[in-house]
Length: 242
Length: 191
Image (cartoon, rainbow over all chains, first blue to last red; front, side, top):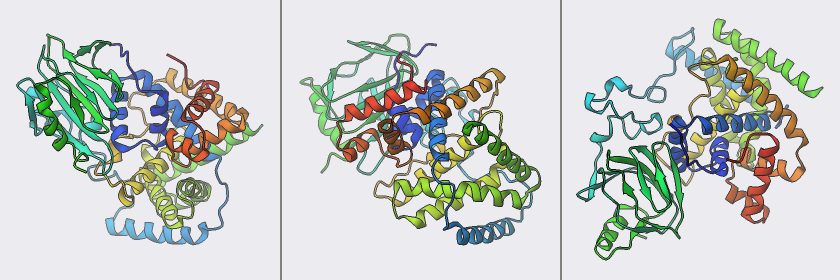
């Protein structure tokens, strides 16, 4: 599988540095699970970060007291947990549901690890809202004052009404494929569209399409009938009320 | 010269990691504390000047993780510095997420996984070592303005956009400085 569309080097750098917003980082993390090439690039960018990190300070007079309180705290922690041997981290952090816990009919779809915090039991179990008989969306999360992350699920052969964006939109193809005037996008492709872009994506006829989208602000439909969606989309996007 | 010294001292730290993983050696942890805590604090203070409490909290958090996760560290797949950097970066993201205006329920643990590779590949590992050396040597040779922008992005945790605002430079200039730097370090190859 060849992926043709990738995030910009700026986004990859900001992600590796940890300065990219969490919503946008979610789209990068999901892309690199599928893309070896960007994974490799992130590796190098992280090595660069580590290099800059090691060049910071070699001494710090403030650490004497900190060290004393750290070792006290550590003794306390180890005692309260009654452990003297290496421990595995507990809690949700390291344990995402494995494929085995997904219902069998959804095992064809592997939910990316980066999305399992919000999609723990497979795509079908999400709260989907129908925009039309062939288009459904489900919001995963949003950052306060920031962007919104959602999944869009479109039936085979269907199209999304022509729309423009009031902000930047990232689309990442998770399953299936779709096309628009500029090209065809398959699994793993990462597409960035800005406000000036007006497009009408159409899903290929062989299978449904599931995409991850990160929206800075709600999309606007421009067709005469589909304009009726706009109030819904606006209400659906948490930051458009004010 | 400098490079050789650095790699030697890293070996020593890796030995300490092994000692923690195998025998819960607190003296080893003590040495790692002396080496890494000043860096972790500097890394945090770069993002939030004056925030000493935050720096202390994050430094302690990272050291606890080192203590507990030492057995998961594999020196063949990532250098210790890279491993500790990712711990510090992730702890800083998490701290800011919980304590800043931009609160979010997105758990960073899902988005930045450990650099530990499940299927280690000797060829890849050798490649990794070469990349690392190239980056280490190349970084010192970069012009000042490029180093400055990299420091803004990585240490101060600024996005390209924020770095541009702060330096009163057009975004395009920041982008091209970063690209030039990454190109010289052979991190970025135009597709």
